[in-house]
Each structure stands twice: as C-alpha cells, then as structure tokens.
Image 1: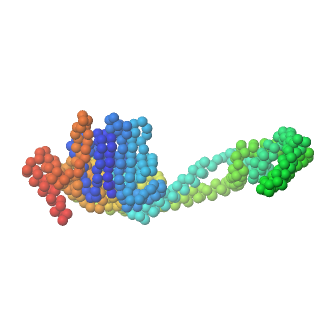
Image 2 (image 1 turned 90 degrees about the vertical axis):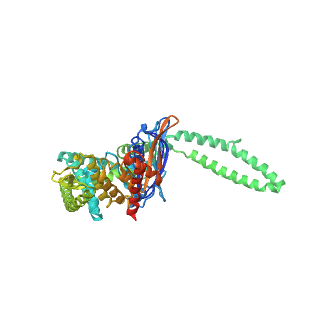
Image 3 (image 1 turned 180 degrees about the vertical axis):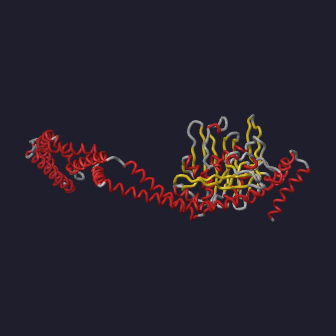
Length: 555
C-alpha cells in the first residue's frame, strides 16, 4: 500500500504531504491546479526520468519521497536479491539537482534509475493520462496472456528461456569457430609452438621470485665484499668494536664486584658481547671465503630473461601461464579432431533447437487456448462498461524463435456491432479507449499481485450512464487493492472512499499548489460544484444523495 507522498520544491509545489489510505482515493482539482504534478511525482517514484526543469524556481533541488508497505512476494524478492535493507516499510526518495545528476534511493541505498523503474513495476500498476501506451505494446499484450496462463505456464517459459539461451550460445560458438582447413592448420601450428615453448621452459612455482633475488645479490657481489672487509676491520682492529667492548665489560665487572645490584646488567652485557663476537666472526669468515661466480650470474640472468619473455606473452604469474598452457592443450586437442568435434556440436545445436521449438509450440497452444477465454472475459467486461456490441480478438502470428516463444500477438477490437476488428492502437475515440483500457486493467488485476493501482483520468470523454458504470467498476477494483485515481467525473468522485483536492493559489507573489483531504461536508460542496458549476441547495442535495448512495450500497 502507498502510505505517504511528500513533495518539496517540485514545479509549483513548495511543500506538500499526502497521507494515503487503503481502498479508493480520488484526486480532484481544476485544470492547471497541479493534479498532473502529483502524478508526475508518483511517476518519478516508480522510475520515470527526472528533468531539471521540474525543480521549483529559486530552489537548488527537488525531493520526492514515497512510503510504501507491501506483502507482494515479487517486490520483497526484488529487495532481497539486490541486498536492499527492508523491515516494515519501503521508503523511496528521488532528489533532482540543478548542478548534478539526480539520485534515487530505496531504503537509503542508492540505486540506478533502471533499478528503480524495475522496482516500481513490481509494486504498482499505473496508467497515466493519455498514455495507455503500454497497453498497445505487443510485449505487454503477450505478457498479459501469459499472466492468465498460470504458474505452470510461467515455469515452461523459464525452461524455454534457458533452452533458447543455450542454443544461442552454442550457435554463436559454432559461427565463431566455423573456419576453413587452412585457418585450423595455422592455429594448430601456433598452439604447438606455444605449448612447446612453455613445456621447454618448465618453470616451477616461485622460481621467478627466487631467481630475481639471487640475481640481485650476485649483481652486487663486489659491493658486498667491500662491506664485509670494512666490517671485519671495524670489529677486529686494535681499537675496534671488539676491543672497546672488552674494555667496557672489564669496567662493568669491577662495578658489579663493588655492588651486587649491577650483576644482572653485567650478565646482560656479556650476552650481547658474545653475540657480537659470533656475528663478527661469521662475517669475517664469509669475507675470507667469499667467492664470485660470473658464470652462475650469467646462467641466472639468462633463465630470468627467458621467464620474463614468457610472462609477457602468456601471463604475468605462474598460475596464468599454467592456465594458458592447459587451455592451449585443450584447444589443440579439439582442433586435431576438428571435423568430428564440429559435427558433434552441430548435432547438439540441432537438438537444442528442436527442444526449444517443442517447448515454444507447447507454450503457443496454451496461449491460444487461454486467448479464447480472455476474449470471452474481456467482451463481458466491455459490455459491463457500456460498450455494447463490442468485439475483441487476440490475433496470433508466427515469428522466429525467441526467448518468449514463436508467437506475435495483436489485440484486435471493434467498439460497435458489425464493425471490423481493428488493432487496439487504431481506436480513435478517447472515451472508448479509456473504457477499453479500464476493461483490460480490470481483468489484468484479477491475476496480478500488485496491491497498488494508479489511474490518471481514464474516465476521459465519459458522461451519464457510462460514467456511473465506470465509477462502479473502479469501486469494484478497489475492494482488494489500493486504487488512486485522478478524475473529473462526479460519479467517480462520489464512489471514492476519500477525496483529495489540489488547489492552486498565490502566496507571497508566487503561485503554489496545495493538497487537502476533504471532509464529508467539503466533499458535498465540491461535488455540488462539479455537478452544475455552482454550489446550490439543490445541487448539494444531489451531491449528498450520491455520496450516501455509495455507503448504502456497501451496507
């Protein structure tokens, strides 16, 4: 359910907050009062594209926030799959900036507009003024038939998508790999050369790091020998470190003999002195036995160069080079038996295509059977909506295999008895189109789990008996879902559980739009004005009767 809409600095709305409720809510107001702004704001929450000109003049940003609560499994799965936090409510916020891109958030997590649009399609079904366009789209029409076919049908569609995907991947692989014998021979020769080079190199794990360390050490042998000689002199000369430490130890020993509290210090220093003597002796021995090996340096250098050349060609690490070798062997094995392997893959591709076509044909049969039921059901609802003699047909055409099957559907409609069926997109009358749209929405809602239905002036071009029938249909739709409607028809307004008035007025020299929820008396006054243009005693009585009639019918 849509709980709250809050708008700040959007178009001519400085600040507005609407608390929505379950059931049937209607938004009313004079032309230009701001109803379309409210619907634009709702559209933004559902993923519509934001435009900087929507920001209120003199403001740096506009903020639209919506609060929702839902038990819709599809919506909750959407949040879980994208790791969007969720507890009791869902808060959507759109911020439009003048100087940088707009931002979208769901429960505090920033999302792209495409993600928000996908989320919006899970939580609400909406049809905006003058653009029942999605109803004209073949993809929506096909999806509508699929929705009617049930859960088993959806599982079959999922299996078909998997089969078609596997077929296309294999087909693409075959197209990319289908080459002449000379190309196969050239690739095989190159692979043999690369495999031979890597196997001859026979590099071991960690060998390159060890060789690099050894090369660095051997490259600095001369410098190392000079430092060893210098350290030996510093340690063993008559006035060297060893002699100084001996003198230091002798003095410290005498202090300890005079004062026992210095014995621990003396023993600590003795440990240090003996450690130093061991280190100094080891360094002197290394210096005396130091051997330079130019031949070994050349061998290490040559081996390291060979490894680095292979790295540049086959991968910067041992694992990458080994992976390249394994894949090259696998590819060579495939090419050496190319003709047989190719034939095997072609047979596999043919089997996948046959499987996908079998699944698609089964799905098509289910769709065609369901289409007959939809035709009958829609004709009933169109009749309920006072489109007498209306006809409806789902026209099927075959298309190439795709992930949704082999069916192209087109909804064909006639609005008068005896008229030829025409594509839905060619229906000219605004009133008829609105009622047909409402008929589709009515039967679609029977199968759709979205709890929010938002309609913008779908009652355009209606009056009298037809308006009353449409109002009753809307009231019926709101029994098991939240219905939010923009309307100019008194009959529709009277059937609503709650009415919101959008009013444009001047404040501080600027035009602002405000939204108020009307009390019962205010609704009577507003409805009276809608009926005749003036609020008179007679029209108020009529308005009161219309509102009371709704409650009496419910009782």
